[in-house]
Image (cartoon, rainbow, N blue to C red; front, side, top):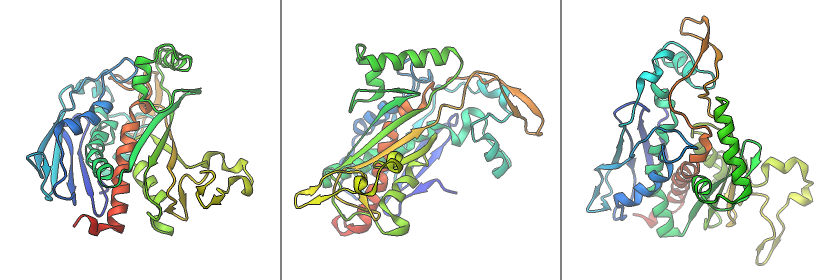
Amino acid sequence: MSNSIGNYYKITTFGESHGKALGCIIDGCPAGIEIKKSYIQKFLDIRRPGKSKYVTTRKEKDSVSFVSGIFNNQTTGTPICLIVKNYNKISNDYKNIENLYRPGHADFTYFIKYGTRDHRGGGRSSARTTLSIVIAGSIARKILNDFFNIKFNSYVNKVGKEKIKVFNERPLDQLHDFGKNKSLIKIKDLIRNTTKNCDSLGSRIKLIITGLLPGIGEPLYEKLESELIKGLIGINAIKSISIGNGFNIEKLKGSENNDEIRNFGFLSNNSGGILGGISTGQDIILTLKIKPTPSVFKKQRTINTSFKNKLISIKGRHDPCVGLRAPVIIESISSVVILNLIMKQRVNLFY
């Protein structure tokens, strides 16, 4: 099973969309890190569903509970267990697809691999399970910020074919607060119209990691970018990842793509802050593309568990654009990956 990531700051996530609870176990977190529930909660609240008409209407408090490893708001150095309980489950919405495979979902592949599946909300393959990543990542990013001044920022810059021209803002905040921004008005209209037509939208997200010193990462098979991609591709619906100027790189000549160097630093950052799998000291820049939410209300062709052709009509509450809630998840798993790489190289700083 592959529910764990990291060798030094190791996280194991658990739970399903309609189960009793979700959460994570963290092994390897240094002792003495101040962690308050309110600190973790602010990241969960960014990801939390049901906050606007542009995301799923499933309303959950997503209130985190400490089970072990944190005492008097400090990590003890022992395994940390944190959970979030599910409350607003409507499992009957999925009763009609109990024996059907939803197109675009992992229903078919999970059943083929395991011989069974939890059809309620996608079970383990649901995007709801990403809240466990946000919990673990919130602690990792605090360590990175407090010890190394490393920061993570990501934002949606495109929904469907429409670009967003507001920089460095949370997408949900943009849609709620920036009513006069023309590009966001188009995005709102696009989401509303797509939802009315019983369909969904994809998106594009940019991730920027600042403050990472040069020399982090390994050559060849444990490159900085390969470790980041391994973590990021585990997030539901991410289908494409570019490092630096990767999505446009075939359009450039070598002399244009090279980041020239002077005694004060690099003159550009087409490499995305990584050369030979090792950080250059520049900002780490990645672009990610998120597929449209596969749960759409249009009738679609599929098969049942007996491999007979059927039509499927999906019910329930689903994000019209799942990428709108993804930035904090992307930042969180990236924090876990970066912390592991630093601990591997500089483990004596912590122990």
